Image (tube, rainbow, N blue to C red; front, side, top):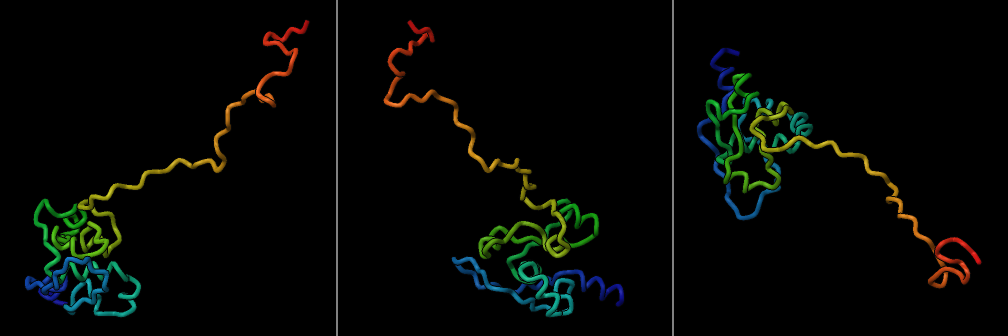
Length: 157
């Protein structure tokens, strides 16, 4: 590959594919339509099958008008460090997709943590006991009270 071909392989097209805007969030699979890009991986069905929903999201972000490019310091730290384009779902675009997530396309594909994500790390949960807490001990007197002759002071006459 020449340097120009490598650059074209790593960049999204400026011409964005249209999206059928709808009030209902899409759950349909998306098959990338642009060939010869890093997210299509040569159109390999094996990679597409292994990546599943990640490939669907990345394809939508990188090819359609649902994605938007972030420039400069708006990019996530991983994309800045690796010199990659940083594409996220736009605010309107994320409202078109069921469970859109908020990581950029490169971080989704590489399965890495994205600094642009608003998602908080999972908190460690304390293990819960399977047993209910013990009840406090209470005196049990059948019939509602102490037996006759048992005084409250413990002395019998």
